[in-house]
Image (cartoon, rainbow, N blue to C red; front, top):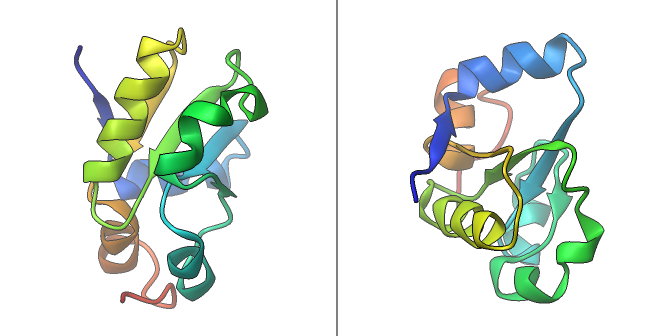
Length: 106
């Protein structure tokens, strides 16, 4: 199963245009408290039990610290029937580096 990725700059442009994206942040709660871009927090270990919180008809962008957990989340969602899913390439670190340095890098 291939995983689509979206560069941070493209995600920022789409959010600025008001596109209806569901940002799924799969990091741990303490990480989310340090640094976030307003996504819906469902830590990766909890994701299998909390799939009902996600609208399968909405476009979903998963994100984590640097990318690997986001990829795992995308694969899990795809295995459970979610088709319009992508990963934020490089995670919150890429967002910091290429979009908004005010978002803390930890």
